[in-house]
Length: 231
Image 1: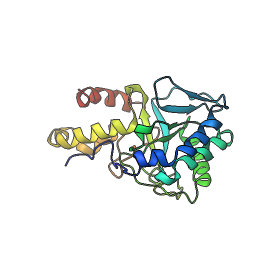
Image 2 (image 1 turned 30 degrees about the vertical axis):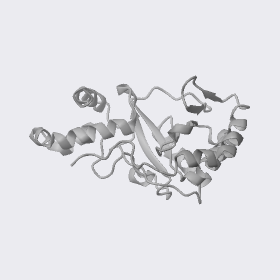
Image 3 (image 1 turned 60 degrees about the horizontal axis):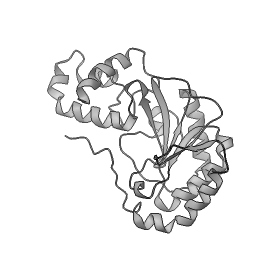
């Protein structure tokens, strides 16, 4: 069984009609952003980033929250997040490019720790109550990791394997596809697929990580197999 493509679901509403229909909202957001020194935009890159109150420490696994809202709620949600950025106090970014609104992971928040992730999820869940969301693959819901926030279909969680220089969703997409193709090999390993998935920090119960802060032995194992997977 092949893993689903990285870019799914492909939301047709996030196309040309969406961009033209929300032009006024986009300009309203930009007027708020460009007057705030905490927001920056890298030249030739579509991400607009907000600097949080504290630097994010160098972590092997970087916790993150994906905010996934329906097309009609995208710019109003971004505007609301901009207006509440000081209260949230977090590092986050949103996508601001006409050609890039077909993919669902356009608002991304970063946490400095597992504990910080829990607080961030709670604040976002409160702020986004009543907002319509949509599904996204290669992630999990906060409740899957014991965060206990009932915002199914809006907030999702992942952990970037920073030591590999890739994102969580890319890591999980490639690793799960490789595992499906090499199942016979995994069966031959001590502990079988169950142990392999655990040592790669991949949950088999959902599409998120097995742990937000896995054991220190996991990066070495993941790095060794990632060379095979990404070759």
